[in-house]
Each structure stands twice: as structure tokens, then as C-alpha cells.
Image 1 (tube, rainbow, N blue to C red):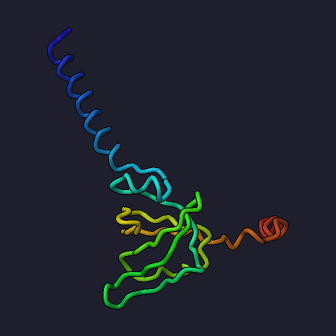
Image 2 (image 1 turned 30 degrees about the vertical axis):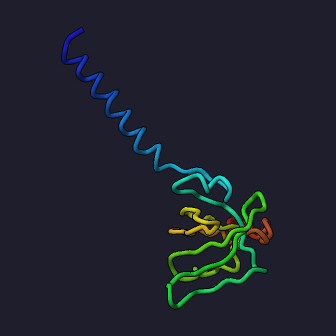
Length: 131
């Protein structure tokens, strides 16, 4: 083989390995609070535990609440920001951050709110599209 081909193949393999290494560390799958304790950054899916106290602290400028993950584990979540709009209506929450001393510190929070189309009659859509 020619030296240029060998150098090209080695460069492609090195570049691909570097990409996989860097992106592999940033990709996170959904987890629960128990598994999040062993990770530097985690995405935890759950529901707001509305029976527990929640609120915004003017001193720390953070919103805190309790969340129950898919396995039933409840932890306090401290979100670095104000309470998101429609927080109470969210069906599911995804908090992104880290767990320290049984408190999850969220840098980001995503909400899945109920769809306005879930209760709609399918025949209403067909009538509107026929017009």
C-alpha cells in the first residue's frame, strides 16, 4: 500500500475514535435517582411529588420541589432558576444535573405537558381537512 493511503486510514480512524470518545461522554440516557448517585451528570425522569413542600427561595434564587422517579424513589430537587410555566400541569419531568447528599441539583428541566389533542374527537380533524 502507498504511504498516503496508510496515513489517510490512520487519520480517519484517529478522528473517529476522538469523536466517539468525546460524544460518548456527553450522551446520557434516562436513569433513576439511585443510578444518578454514581454519575457525574444524569437525566432523571419522574413526576412532581405535590404532597411535599415546594417553592422559590428569594435568598438562593432557586426553585425546589420533590420528585418521584419511575422506580418510586423520592428526592428533593433544587433547580437553578425560577419555577417553569405550567410546572403544575406537567405529566412528566426530566431533570438534568447531579445528585449530592440525597439532593438532586438540576441545571436544566424539561416538562412534558398534556397534549391538547388527547381529548379531541378524531372526526373533528377529518371534517376540518375535508373543507
